[in-house]
Length: 227
Image 1 (cartoon, rainbow, N blue to C red):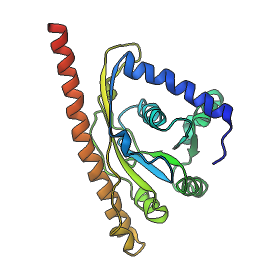
Image 2 (cartoon, one colour):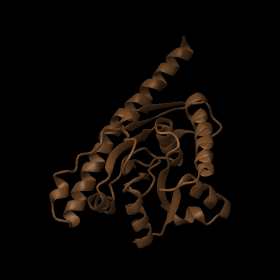
Image 3 (cartoon, rainbow, N blue to C red):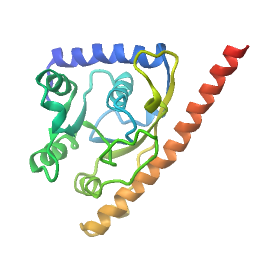
C-alpha cells in the first residue's frame, strides 16, 4: 500500500520513543521476532491484556522491519475524538463498527494480501492476563485470505503504570501456524471454528513461554537488587 515518506518517518520516530520507554526505562523482552516475514500478507494475532499491546506490537515489528506499516482495526469509539482519531489513523489504525462491518472487512482483506495487520482474536481486552476464546470471524478471515499467521503473546504489561520505571514484560512471536489441512475443507462455520481454535492454541503456547520469561526477568532483577 502506498504510504507517504512523511507518514512513515512519523511512525518511525514515535516507534523509537516508545521502544526507549519499553526497553530502556523498563524491561520489555522480545522473543521470536525473526519469525515475522519481511514481505507478503501477515496477520499478527495476539492476546489482548493492555492498551500497551497496540503500541508494543508494531514497535517490535518496526525494529525488525523498519519503514513498514502495521495496520490495525479498532473499535470506532476510539476515533470519535478528532485528535486521538488522527493519531490512531497516522499509525495505521482504522475504525470498525460493532457487528458486521462490510467496509472494514473488505479493507482487512485487501491489506492481508500484501501488508502486516495486527489483530486480537478475542475481540476484547483481558486485563487479568488470561486468554479468552477466539472469534469465529477471525477463522473466516484466515480461510478467505490465507495470510501468514504469526501467533503472538504478551505478558506482564497489563500491570504496568505509565510513570513507573523498571517494570517487566515480554512479547513472543511464534512460528507461522500451519492451516493447510483446514484450508482444504468446505467454507463453513465449523471450518472457521477449527481454524480459530488452532490459532488460539498456538497463542496459548506462546503465552506460557512469555509468562515464564517475564517471571524469570523479575526474579533476576530482584536478586540484583538484593546483591
